[in-house]
Length: 362
Image (cartoon, rainbow, N blue to C red):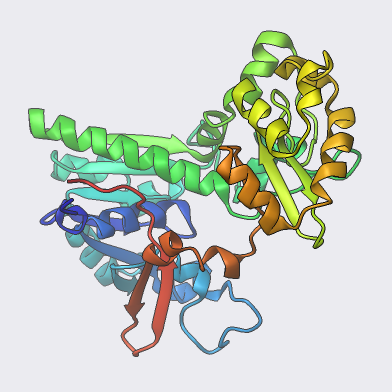
């Protein structure tokens, strides 16, 4: 299969007035696909705030951080002071020559500096202006980092162990979800422009992106009045799904049994065919109701096997199961290694990050 990803948007010019994670992830998406991406950062603050978000092991004198590198591959970087008339004129000239402008400016700041959609598109009607807001009301300029939106959109309430405090997801997932929404909107705008010759303004917000991702948890409430509670890794509608077990070598095994056939295969693989005749476990609904009882039985069998022995049996039987990998183990997977993007900074410093693109075109 010929992979044309790196040239797909060759000739497209994207200007990024965005910081932190969501907006820069959109810019990197287009950079990976061959676009020219110019990232304009605030010179007065030393650039994107994430340049300073460093682990203790990182060089405190370096102008970049691993966090910043995660979504800033393949871009040109300009540090400008948009309150300075000369720098502002330079930035405006660059923006007006673009196909796409990505912004997470506060609306009041964008209007004050002349970098809002109306101002730029008045001079370039082919421009696609992509705006990322915190909340559905663009005039609500309350600060909204990812953890705030995880709380506001119900993710924190659902996430964690029963009878324990809420737990934040360990990646800024709301930012990533918002980036996907904004990418999709820009792609539709590019298609529309190809047909009509006209650009447009596209917007999304962190809150709406989070809400759009509640999926079955939202429907469980909207249709049945069920308020999702903290269940750890367990699934509210399926069992055993997300349930974990300790093996003979103290390693942890996770099961994700989603069909009756898979449950039958699980029982066969573990020598528990008698469960298939037990009315408490014969259907998924019954297993969800009797989850704790089922897990006691499964744990008794799984603790007789090492993780490798259990995985070998389950994989051979077509039962979805997994080891719990740390990041080092994740990047021992060949597919993960293939997704690493490397880049040298202007000072020669090597950097690495994971591709934002997980598809091929051919």
